[in-house]
Image 1 (cartoon, rainbow, N blue to C red):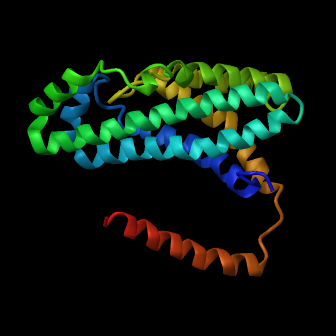
Image 2 (image 1 turned 90 degrees about the vertical axis):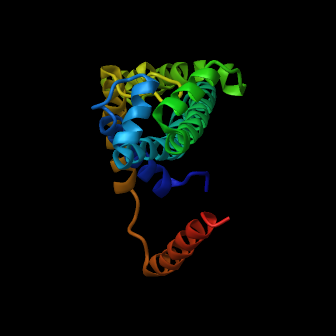
Length: 231
């Protein structure tokens, strides 16, 4: 079986876009630039944490979704699948890196206040790091993936175009929501959610034995997740 597998890949094609859209919409009431985002963190900590956590989770889940889509593209266009998959996944790593900086800025807001955190972020905003050189993948990769999906016949013209709108999504640390953010994440849902539903519908129902194995495994993973926060 090739990773991520049909069940995981199908679920990721549904959940990844949905999580990104939810995160985008949750932070949409606040101004786009980082001083306003930090002010929103101080004034609405629960909402902003939910927004950024949802967006981060969506990026992580999308890695499995992209792998699943690339496998389907690779059946007829292996070269395009490889390049498109690598570019988009590296871009997802870049957004995940940005999310780590976002989290640090959230913590700074709690410890230093809005003004102190804003000054801290402003001083280091332009510092170079590995993903400074790879930031083009965050946007460009989606255009390549959309073209590959269209050339391979995995997605039609409309849904390939919808997939390409993810390339419009702004990038960087502490970026809020603009109209193109909503267009991009909604376009991703249009492109991939129906495919994910179809992939899941094609699978045979889990056997009793598989369910009995999956339930304790899920409980065990949940316990490990809790333990991971303690050290």
